[in-house]
Image (cartoon, rainbow, N blue to C red; front, side, top):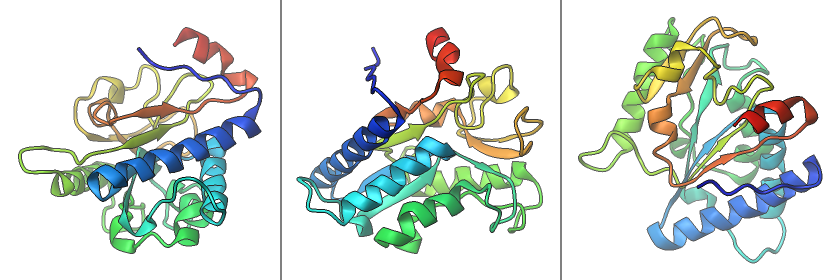
Length: 215
């Protein structure tokens, strides 16, 4: 059964998630020597990363060795690399560049002005990156924590209700005709999302209350 944690407002939610994320990654490093996190975009997701960066500069009970953290993304907008819509760009500004995560541990999904003209090719490449990082005999690496936001209509990552991606069993899929712009995206599928050790769904705001209640 999922654990449901309710905070009084977005500020408390961001603070609680950031502190829990630092603790969870530190614990993973104690056990495995490294940690792995799958990031999300959106207002709350980015605010959490900003708060984690602040915690990294403060004396806290747990500390994370950011040189030993692998960073992945649950989804990405298929737009140019420097587009403000890119989840990667927001994450780099909020956290990754601040704490110095090594470039070879940042596993970004390809942008539309990268080596792949079609999102299907970008999705296949990212699936290959996941498989390359997986232990022998597995298709996916270990994800200690996978962060997700949710839209008012209930979408997570870039999987919208009634989208073909919702029933696609591939680990990474191209998503076209998204009802929310930008319309073309690349997303982990549910097979990859559900493989994580822990999935944290971060939802705030009255506009999303109905979707939360339905879930």
